[in-house]
Image: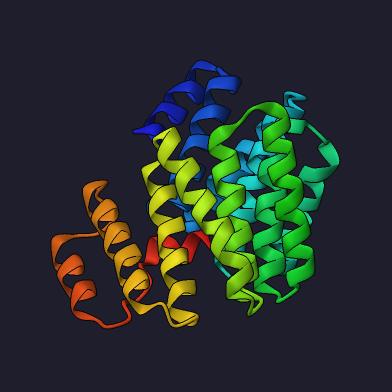
Length: 236
C-alpha cells in the first residue's frame, strides 16, 4: 500500500510524499515484517530524497532506520556509519532514537560500557523532550545491556521500570519485551517462578497484539525455558 503511494507521489512529482511513503515502508519492513533488505532499499531511496530536499530532520530518521536494518543483518560497521551520521545531525528528539540504536550495535559488538552509556543518554534525552514511550524503550534497553553484560541483578530494576512505563503509555509490545527480559534475568538468578510469570504475561501480550500465533503460544508454554520470540530478538 505505501509502496503504491510512493509510486503515485513520484508520478505526480510530489517529492515529499514519495519520501514519506518510502520511509514508512522502510520502517515497517525493519520493525514489523522482518525484511531488513527491503527496509534498506526503501530507506536509502527516501534518504536520497530528503538530502535533495535539504530535510535534515527526516534524513536523521532514515539514517536511524538504516542503522537498525543493517544491525539486523550483522553489518555492524555500516550500521555504525549510518548512526554516527544521524548523531552528527544533532536534532534532540531524533538523537534519543539514534542513541538507542547505537547502543544495540555496541551491545552486539560486546562493548557493554558503550551500550550502557548510549542508553543512559537516550533516557535523559527522552525525559528532556517528554517522550514517555521513548523513555520506556530506553529503560528496557538498559536492562538488556546489563543483562547481556552478565549483570542480571543490575538489569532487574531497569526491566521493571521499563515494563511499568510501557504499561502506563499503552505500548503493549514494549511492555511484552521488557517482561521477557525480566523473565530472563529472574531465571538467571534462580527466581524460576517469577521468571515463568513474566514470560507468561509477555507471551499473552504478544498473542493479543498478533506478534505470535496460537500454535507458537502453545509451543512456548510447553518449554521450561521458552525460546525468545523472533520479534524480540530483532529488537534487542
